[in-house]
Length: 453
Image (cartoon, rainbow, N blue to C red):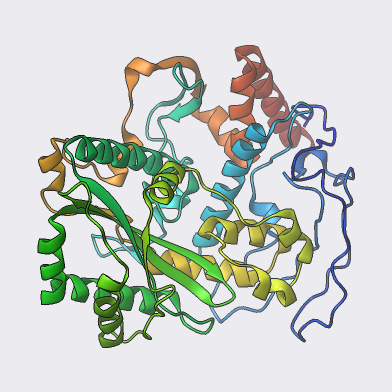
């Protein structure tokens, strides 16, 4: 296949960093030391599978699995093609990586079997998300307001935990709703405070049981008389609860951020007012007692506003420095990795540790609500009833979208076969002619494969 773009090395904010060899220290016995690297400016032999970041690529070594468990091949084999054009900006690179991570997550979770509502066993919904068509043809839409390209006519999963594409759309919608709620409440003379709760966690603890205990501790705390008294004193009228998790050397850092809407404008909440109740609830639920320093935190209005503004903007802590370590001996230094950072880590190192951790995370959070409003509070604010995550993803605002092009199912199957979803979308950002040229090249690729085998 002819490359869609002339493949030139792109100097970006990531790839412009100087190449450094990994620190030479004694690795664990089970660590497979990398044997080859690509230096800045070097490209893989196959131009059409040039990955987003080519600074440090390491051969993948398959590791043994438990009997019956699928062994995923090289992460690069399962990723979307992410060759950037010569004029690639950070925005283009992020869009290409979005499809790459989406593809990798689906391949990882393909081996996971779950039971649906009908009792039948199947795979997570992300395995068909943005892949399987649900209409006779695929419509490509361009949003006039934000100048973004969307695909219509494909199945979506609506998973805020597994799917980075659906999660982005859901989180942005929730962010606008939270901002609207804060604006309405403060306009009525009330105050909003953000309560953060967490607990001690360790590397040998699994995510699912810790999440169950954390949820039980919070329910226990809010049902006890001490919390009821605090609600009356603060004149607490409603709350919005958001569940989050990051991973580091001490395992899963499960925590929650809760916006507390109080009637008084000058209401003051101290962490000490809540710490004892939270500590007792944690111990009674089977968790270790949290420290006074980290267990409970009441954010300032400024830090709360910064947190709300970042909702929907997935930030990565898997930087080039993390990619360059290339081994298990550096895991202890990686802190605050988001679930999608685990995908980046697996993609860049081929270390099955990150693959297993993502599967563990996915199974633990499946079916859980990321955001919850207290009963009746949306009605109190005069806001419309809350839509489910799936409804948000499938919602179409027709008046803001223009039809850019239509794609036949046969062409879509070819785009999927050659893992070019991201490249196709990028061609649409250029022009209609670029999109049509892209399709011609994909068809020629398919014809050549049939002719020459």
